[in-house]
Amino acid sequence: MARVIRCIAENVVSPLGTTARSNYDNVRAGKSGLARYESMGNITTPFVLSRVDRQVIDSLCAELGILGNYTFFEKFLLCSSAQAVRDAGIDASSDRVLFIVSTTKGNVSLLGQPEEGIADERVLLAKAAAQVTRYYGNPNKPIVVCNACISGVCAQIEAMRALRSGRYDYAVVIGADEQSPFIISGFLSFKAISDEPCRPFDKERKGLNLGECAATVVLEASDKKKRGWELVCGAIRNDANHISGPSRTGEGSYLCLMEVLKECNRQELAFVNVHGTATAYNDEMESIALFRAGLIDVPVTGLKCYYGHTMGAAGIMESILSMYAACDNTVLATRGYREQGTTYPVNVSSGNRECKGSEFIKLLSGFGGSNAALLYRFEE
Amino acid sequence: MERRGLEYVVLNQGNAQLTELYRSQIGDWPKFFKMDTLSKAGFVATELLLKKLGERRCGSEEFIQSRAIVLFGSTASLCADRNYQETIQNKDDYYPSPALFVYTLPNIVTGEIAIRNHWRGESSFYVLVAPDAAQMAFHLACAFQDSVTESILAGWVDSRNNDDFQVFMTLIRKEDAADTDWLAGQLQLIINDLNK
Image (tube, rainbow over all chains, first blue to last red):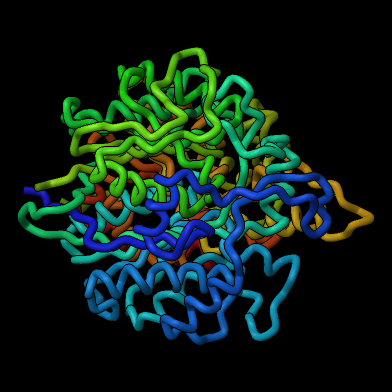
């Protein structure tokens, strides 16, 4: 039998809290980290962003004993992973523990604003990830998953595979991105950003919001099933259609959904946590993929209205919040949604709803024509 | 029986070589001229590899879903990042361009290759400190755990600046990855060639 992969600890650091529990409680209560900014650096177009207070991160690092000369991005990775590693009770310095970092842009802000005492090479993603493995005294070579917006789901899939191979017993999967003028100006140039809180799947949706988050899952491989969230399977598929535009047939997302449905017990499927960026094309594409996969009636939920698009963290944070929601028999509200705005009527709601079922699907898509999905199941 | 070594293509001679190879060997994909250096190099290396292997483009729906693209690099999109940063660095000269921004993700090259070949399998980009045959062989072998993946276009795609890049592309079949040590040995031979 293939080794069973289970989540044994998790953490989320965001404007909505510094633990997974506080984040979930705040989202359930309808709180959002989104705020409007009139400018940033050379950007003079207003935008809405969910931004982490730097002082909160600095005091969290001090509390956790993270004292080296680190960039904001590296502190973000460390303060989230340190809590999850502590809660998991694992020896992170063992060669049986694999660290995987998920990010899109890492320390890219160093290009525009070099920092005193930080070597230029830290702009290289693997050099930033090496700060993490060095902090834990982990001897394995660092690996960074850099697959645009789907990175956080890909990183969990890669961890699952590495654990199933037998070489490792634990994987610490950390996702984070810093929102600097680099990313914000880029998405503004794409005209993809809304100057209001985003409205996923709504008729009046105007685009996405960006957000900052660091999230960690610690996965464990074992030979038998145990109580807890099992990462059952996952898939990554390309649209082979366009490098920046979503497929009009939802091809890659559809193929990912069909792949994870092979292992899914449909009566137990509580909800699908989608990407739901609130851009016109993404949400339309997801509605098509859900329809084609026979999932149009299944409750759907999107979290961008609380966090914005958190890039490298999205796949991990959204998986963690889905675990808490499913345990709480809740389909979290997709704030900002009012009226059907996609060709196919996605089963989405602006209020929290009750649900039952021990499984959920996490779906993401992104630039490069990339799509990914994974299936988690709660084992009693 | 002695197993045949992996076929591969190495490119490390700068941008002029890419344009020359595109014009002399490819020629029917004008999107090439819009690509950044990383994508151009990855694209041309893939085209040359498929020619070398004599593989016909397209194929059945089953085939296009079974072909994955797994690329590695150490600089990721740094070269495109620097180009884009220049457009936002100065207030008086601020003109962020979506055409440049889109290439600030290293997995765009996987998308360019997937589009050209209609491959709908897995596409992934991993960033490592340096080309490491054992580390790459391990992650490639892991990629075959996917239930439909039968072959992987694998490569190292790295670009320090617009005219300094190192790229190799090779094709790995499921049976090649079953013996991870053999695969690592093959990748090491290619890496040695890359550094020549």
